[in-house]
Length: 256
Image (cartoon, rainbow, N blue to C red):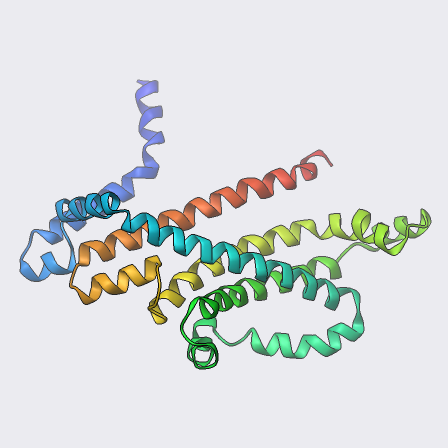
């Protein structure tokens, strides 16, 4: 009996998804209008098989992932550089800070028309949008991390007469690492959302957003549902991967 109860507790995580799937299938069987808005599970399964067989789903998902990774890399590198500069230099903070804090209030997707006007609707514009989405949270978390290094740690660096580079690598960077990791997790989430969003607005080239828009234009709601599920699952998988990496990088905190 205890084993049975334990197994039931282990299934709690799948209970809500199963209920949602059952409700979805029920809605799809009501009438023609509901069948269009709520594609049946059989139609979704058939279309999923077709997309996998043709390689269309894989190619578009890969394009979105590559765009996200490239934009994330650019945004993180630039965010760390700018955030650290503002935290460690008052001149840099006064020069860059007001502009940065003003621009980060503007929604990324609200910049798409302007970016498309300047650079077109090609790959460069999409990567730029993803880079900006990752840049803002990474800069803010980097700035906070380096600004709040405890004074006692800085004092240790001065006692041991460390050079500036040694103070940065042995004192400042380890102290700011939790904030940097937190910024990376936020940057990843914003990068993935903005990558798909840019594909929805700039419907050229491959990508899950482009596939979704094409399916909507062709009244293939089952493909739209597949794209939504794929976006959610890939985002969840990337978040779990980065969370495990971050726990590994910060494992030393449990030893203190």
